[in-house]
Length: 61
Image 1 (tube, rainbow, N blue to C red):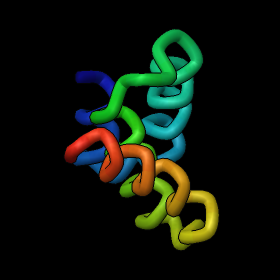
Image 2: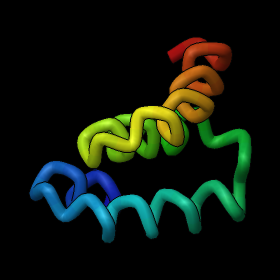
Image 3: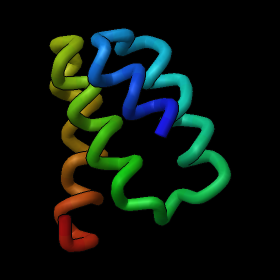
């Protein structure tokens, strides 16, 4: 929820950090992949975002 709050308040670097911690602990957390992909997109880091968005899509999001 903290990562999501940072995302919605446009604190994208903080959101990214939190999401990466979540994924370090649970690489199968599909919502974290989706949020990280969107966070990276909003930072115009589209190439980095694509793998996370693909994972989220493959997991059914």
